[in-house]
Length: 448
Image (tube, rainbow, N blue to C red):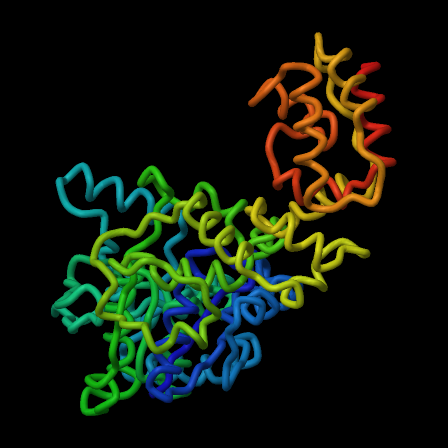
């Protein structure tokens, strides 16, 4: 068994592709299969080395590895040789129509009430016409002649699926400059690298029908691998409102989620459960493998809800031991600090703000009408040393001296001490702030 993940290094890895990578990886690891990372970088203008590097870094961050890897840009002679075989067998035919000419043809067919398919006009070209076009400096691009049949397969997620090839235009496989397109290179590589299972997005269902036809033309109809090849198509992700996720991919790249402080175990657990009836659990991919089942994935689109991801991330952080996060905390943050603040974090990066509260500078907000109370609080501030009993003793004294209680007592103190109207329990936070900082903030708050 061999599976492949084949991203194009033309941008940052987003959650939709990460989900496909994760499902491929877990399916392979569950069954002792091989994982191939293939970079589909034949689009030389858009493919960038920095994106290729980022893809690999982000996959490793998510806990995914691979057994083999290659770049399509290193295999151009292989594609050229395969194209020559298809030309010799009559499956590839040359075309010279320009984009404008093709547009006119499509518009004419639509006016006639026919589907805007390519009319295979190039097949009527004589050898003399071909030679004349080449002599005039034209370079042909090459289309694959699809068979007049319906390609069917048993999909690992969607069930029985079929693609009617006569309803499609013959696909262009080789550009006029000789460069191959994805539809072609993907088949050549799957055949050459002996891939057995292909798991990818539902938007590739039509591609699958076309590529199986190309596969058979390259390998021959008697090649048992063509009939043994297994496909599974994952329903696409939508946003929380059921809309297209593509409009939000800029904020949902793995690189951005990493910068925002989302933990890989939370993201992996969330993506693994998407589209199933299972509740997501925090875990790196290796830990999730035993509970994975491709058949548990629904036929319906899965909603990617950032708030659900953050809730899982929060759950993970609340239980995370200090040693697991130490390297990502502000310099000087100790275990006592982590134990106090972790219950109030959605993202690990938020720890920096609370470290500033306990060890840095806070400018209290203006609280109209609270100056007298804050002066009283400053006067009643207990002497050090401070511990977990200090907050209770201090507020009880203020309650007795001012008659305040509940929110009227606690909120002005929280705002003055932290600059926030909510946060960690001040019983635990106050000793970390210390008397000197607390006194300064109360004084500034009273004078604001």
